[in-house]
Length: 490
Image 1 (cartoon, rainbow, N blue to C red):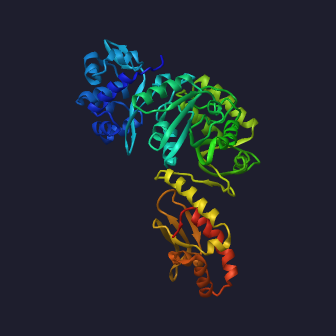
Image 2 (cartoon, one colour):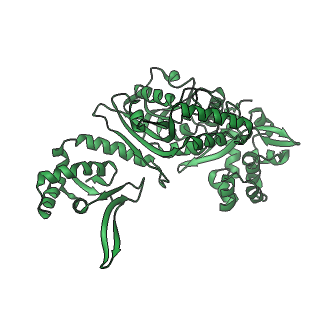
């Protein structure tokens, strides 16, 4: 059954949820840190114990988050003014043991500006081809990396349960969401109705539903799992061979962007024997775009296959899963795949000289990348406006407040001997650059008062080096410092 939530039922459900404090903060407060963390690991007993005296909120948590059957009277009280029978007619509940059980996952979600509720499939449908996932790691990753500047129009390509479109409703005047799966569109529609959010929903694959249209911003968590050309699960499999779907999407996106428009998406690309992965991805980019491709993870073939089998809820030791894994690994061997990369891709339509940058950012990044992406786009614009050596040398620059200088020393007979120095930002991606003495001195002088050229001249005198020689040595590093936000225009 597909969810079908009327505006009237949605208003009643919102009333019930708000009265019971069925929100991210409300649930976290009820469960407490330990039980909340355990629930995030899939361990429900601590959460069940924490809800025993939780009143209506406890009932909703057990019913909608823990998957328990609850008595009719308790459910009626918790959902009032929405009757349980009406919730069942909307596809949210199912009769169970004289009471009710959740037919869908309905959970609180939010950001710093407020709360939402998101509908998705329960885990017991996980192995169904059209399973609709909820607020998972990929959704959170993309949401945290997205630029949140005000825009007139935004497209959420492959919306799933609608998470990215909810975020977009905060900063876009008009939001369009598409999906190829009717079940996903029904889930997203119910999510938008429940949250009283106006989103245009269109059905169809890839860019077909928005043919001929352009947007100020596009976000997408597409089916990006590279593998043989098949569709076991609509949410992750493109039906194309390997990473061909990502290549086609990157070629198509700029044609649907307004001038200066930005597209952001998650993606995976193959590391093919004998090929450099940035060269492969670069070949997919059409002319006229800035691109920032950040590789966050690299998995060997066995890890890649096992990860996505477990994500689908498969018993990786079962004969069926082993047969699937064998076919997948055979395909990788034939295609000479050595590893699979995963990360973020930001593409902007530009009329200037394109800036295309590939970077590895492996490991944990404690801060969201959305502000960093926004800053990267601004810094690329500034560097383009100061592309000539003369323009850059005339600019006053300052070291960003979050930058520190690290000094590494080695113990010896006469005490510590300095062996290297590095500057590092202590916010965002923690960009780090090795520097020598003259470079460290130049950075120390960048306080926003003198033009860069004046500082270089002073440095040349101090180190008895020709100015032209120092300029040639310094400017490439300065451009990298600016691009990484170590130096900022004063």
